[in-house]
Length: 314
Image (tube, rainbow, N blue to C red; front, side, top):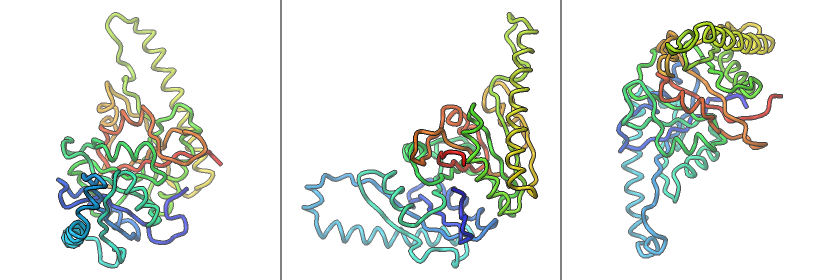
């Protein structure tokens, strides 16, 4: 379903802890705050390292320690939200929540459902190169079963002071119909935010590159067929979006290069760009399940990302 479809504040659940190496997901939320009305809640979740018997023995001592940690965490969240420039009236009354349990992804999923979040924001593994995203274990889990859209943030990415200025949608499914629901969600968001939509297709093989021993005419023929197929997919996508959003500015582009990094970098990107991806359908339940092509693409994207749960085209 589209994000904030009922025109209420855009509810964002941010996964962040004071021990995190960076503040990227909070900066992402601040960037969205410059685009639309938001309401944020920061969840700091950690896995209980103790056995249940040990927890029972600790009893009140653990609860006292947890309360102290929650208080310290709340102060750190408050300072970080303020430093990011997110206005106080955009914080939820319970803007800082500390949670513990056996599974961090499960804790975040439950917290998102309790908050009725439109989006869950995650940071990158701090070992990622500057401007790139690498999924940690929590992100990897949520990218395979979250019922709520997941936002991913490249490390130390530079964001526009004017918020989101263009939405991009990358078609990653060979069956274009699988991409359609998420594409229309992205188009609706672009229309709500009054920004243009760019629909893109990537090839990691290059459009004219061929091994020396290959016959050039064969390589050119395959290249021509792929390009014709991609242009056809883009034309269909533009037509379907245009019918539902006739006032939306829509562009289509093809990115190609030797490898995904070169394919992504072959297109021009701006500080106000946000890229959206759909999920691979995995049955009747609406879940994020990122396909192999999108998984390969993620580490090479240099702008903030939203991955939508899969659902059937209506």
